[in-house]
Image (cartoon, rainbow, N blue to C red; front, side):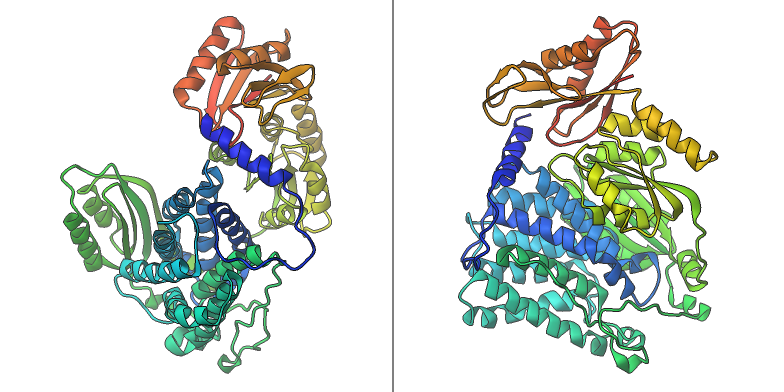
Length: 574
């Protein structure tokens, strides 16, 4: 629970910070943990905004070809881990950054990116701040770790870009007086290398594009830089080359036609990814090396990274079952994913346009558990956001556009997001319908009322009515001492909030939760549901639920993992 409090203090501090002066920003000599956190979160946002451009640079439409999407999902996982890090200590932020990237690594590009991040973080730690000198060391380590992770490194890829940036870092540093100039200098070197990638890989030259992964990597570094310069990013891309016969217009995404005969180029049909966890006590580093060699004999694009605590595996093979059997000799398997690249390619090459369905749904929430619950209820897109992290109108519009449906219902699940959701109507190419849900329980209730076979009008009526049948409450803590709603709060007090005001205060989580439920209770309530946060154990949640079930015998009491930050419990009464 203390970690949640620390995170709230960080968020509150950031929220209360006065806007930057319009004057030219002072030069940055060093980067501390708080600044690095901001750089990571900004880079994640920028990459996510530009992932479609990076995807458009792919020269072969297979699952591993979703470079922008895979890199963005990998970096979003890293950013989430950093967001949940309770400390601004540089070493703690770096540890979260590297851990989140490894756990969220998606596809070949995502796995390689996670290794670049791992190397960078290894170079950053060792002092309280990052200097130009330590950044140079970090680039070298990022290059080394990434190259070592790939069994057959290819030039003209993301690896080349990070290597060029690293090799030029010392000469760039000699011309720089601050961190801003240094980052801009290595980004310029990366851009120079990126323009050379079509000469290194014939497939890029044939398609008339630069390397997608390299572009994604430079977008990340641009996101880092813009935090220091305090300038809005205005990214303009010139990523198409006219020598291929394409129009060569800068910044315009192209589509590439492939013949079905090119399917023969895919020697190994199944993109296979999984984690090896809970490794056997008998497993050694040598066993991991032997496992990597075995995969090389049955496939390509082999990546085996990690250590004796966790291994991430990626391989293209015609024998995914054999690859998994080999892995079982080391430990247990987790998060298995196998994609048929031949079938995906057939669909893309055939240009089969997916018909729009009648209805789709977008929901906003914070917390992996809550996201999974909405997904299980067939919500098409779950947009990360909530208290302290409100998505913009543009974020909501883009989420709606990604849903292949004529009509998209949007559930803001927070009163501070409703207005942005309404504004998204003017930005989206879909017909957006806002269900003005003010809390997670209201959103879940409304989603449960959805009927894909019914009319638009009836769905709107039923969902609007359903959101009003549930009462919502929150259990959190005071981030500062104050007097509010007739309560004399001290910093750290646990507080219970109903739909409009603080109604409970205390030092014990169980007692405050019971008091909150008591204030919300009426004779019509038959169900009590607790969604517990990311720093509450299931045992703690069960203990609170047990006390409530004894007190309200006529009610069914359930708990679900929400994983939300800041709030111990989200409480739902129906």
